[in-house]
Image (cartoon, rainbow, N blue to C red; front, side):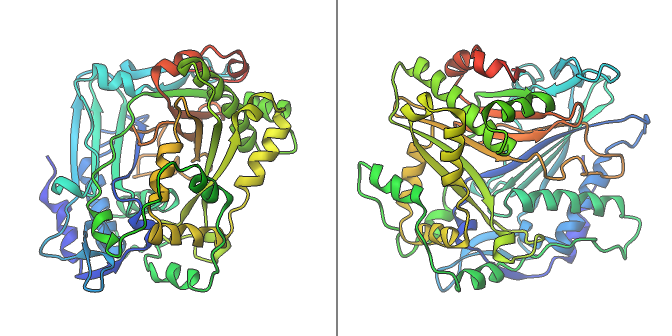
Length: 471
């Protein structure tokens, strides 16, 4: 049980109203999450102390992120806002959980390419939910009066490993903002004994700097938005004048539970690049490989050739907009390549890389401004995108969220950083997350894909030349 002293830090939270941006609003119903697995290498009896982790969380929220304990509402002028009321905080849900199995019962292992090192370990989330007695970890949502942030310190019987689970509403952060929050939280936890400590890189929370920037930008519609409108078989629903209450009331989107894991060693990842187009990035050539093998698996699973294949990359707008890296809100947008499936099957890797790059390298502020205008005026386009960006008889889809270069291994609460990175089930069939694997220097690719389709994917000779199927 969590001692009340941790929540005492929240007594310092001051009343305020924070206006939400259009991109923040569009993420209602979505979550950000992570499962970070730490190893007690020094047999510390206070390892990953719940009190330290909870106190650090509440202190960083009170001092730097009060929005996290606010409640969404509609202001008098019809804008979506976060109301921070000290008498009615949306309290974080922080607790400890003990599993009566060792963590190793939920690991998959592979030999390390460096034979002098231990085997590479992977956390099998599906096995954890099947065998641990924990049917599901709770997910953050503003609906049902749940917390906007949920933390679980998970201890395993007879094991040196402890898992830290975090789930937060996407309204609060994008991926970059969330990673910064995790590190700032850990920094506060490490410095609880120094009341005068201030963060080395405090967040910038003022949403107005984004509004002010986009007020100076002229929108240019991205090709993929035009494509989605043309492909729509129904009229695009305009955004209602009072769209804020509609978005705020968005129910939590159910997470996709048919999750799988592929692992690429660094050498194999480079081989993908060399074989496809050595002049391009590994991220782009990986997208080429996946777009081909996922389409092939879909054709087998659905016994149908879809007309369109889609590849999506999120992109961050901070640098191009001159907005500080420390900005904590949502400033990520989607770059989407609509490709004719026949061209994906028949084209060379180099041709496909060039086609994806042509679409997905267009990440200007003008395109981002158009996305904001779409949210505010033609929100039905977002629903059309949701219907198209999936694997079905009508479409093939690969969405790549690249977390490889985010400082997730530096989330150190005073006991060292995590040994293994993982995640909970997340929303979006066809979506994937790329994590760095520090154990062997490769990458882990967590992918949402239907089990029956994965049966074909995991036997793809083209994929197995480079990837190891973990589960």
